[in-house]
Image (tube, rainbow, N blue to C red; front, top):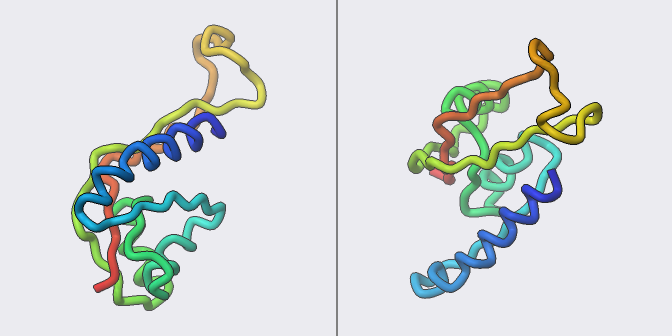
Length: 113
């Protein structure tokens, strides 16, 4: 997982030059609370977040009564990885082993309305 986070941070750092030309800055923030990024946007601590599906956003808005968030656009990149405390390599996983698959096909860029 930490390798994936390091890669995202490198990508953010590599994108800084292009974003700066347009007057933007990008900061990568790691959160262990799934609701925190949307709360940051709602409280104007962040301009946008990239972390949820449309279904999650709808549930979040309904559950929190926060109505100021909306999808700005879909994004097509989401880092994917396999994580295990049991296996060190893919080759160690036997046929028929159980795993959990989380599909995050259409991620949203969420902004304050």
